[in-house]
Image (cartoon, rainbow, N blue to C red; front, side, top):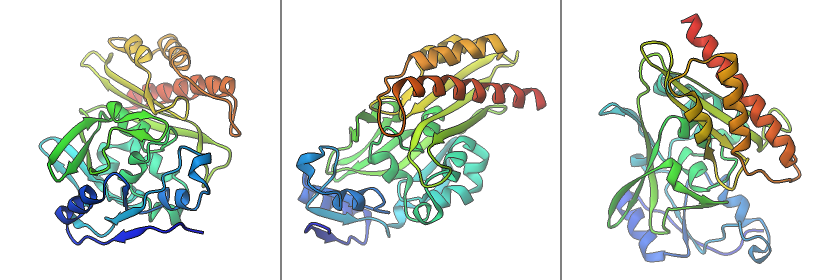
Amino acid sequence: MLPEFDLLMPETLPEALEMLVEAAPDVAPLAGGTNLIVDLRGGDPKLSKSLHRPGVLVDVASLDELRPIRRENGHVVVGGGVTIAELLEAPLIAEYAPPLKQAAAVFANPLVRNRATVGGNLADGSPAADTAPPLLVLGAEVELASREGTRHVGLDEFFVHVRQTVRRPDELLTAIRWPAPASGSVGAFRKLALRKADAISVVSAAVMVEPGEDGRCEQVRIALGAVAPTPIRAGEAEEALRGEALTPETIAQAARLAAESIRPIDDIRGSADYRRRVVEVLVRRLLSESANQRVSE
């Protein structure tokens, strides 16, 4: 049974921002609702501090300002209200963000993909958010708008703790943007879950490799989900590959460093030791696939 709450229906983005500031802090934006409605049905928030139970919801699902997917000044821009299903169909995502498209393809199930938004998936702050690792390796930032103005925050600084972000109650995540990857860049995403569909990640991983003119790694990003209080970058593993060729030896070293960088827990989906082993395997496979893709090109 849902608790009582007020539902506000703005017609424009400025109107929505005004509603957020007037109702803050006991307010939340509502788009797809695939996380928020579950929280509202989730029992006593005193027994689970991670539940979001605001007294006022601002419905932003119909705002056209949150729906673009476009190129702008060398960047790809995705509105916060774009659904996961729309990511799958967008040519720009297929061309400039293969890891994000791969994550969208294994996101929950078709019914949820039609409702869930990329902005909502990030703003919820789950360590297992499927869109977070691919967007981290793309070097994405989020746009946070309020009545006072707009600020941009790198995604690697956006997450604070389990289901906590830097977004203020009076702010709305209006867009995500990242630089269009350099020519020749390759990337991929994989997740391990307890079943193939409609399951939370036990571990997820994404990589993005930008080669230099000599074929060595000029830029490498490795991101991991469900292995720490927030989605994370594997900085030591990235540094170990920078300036190096992707060989079996360098890949194995990077995979080991990635596994050493995580802070997993034991839960009903898997043990901490299991997650460490899986991270090493996934990172090694993704980097090997990237190396093979470079050779085939």
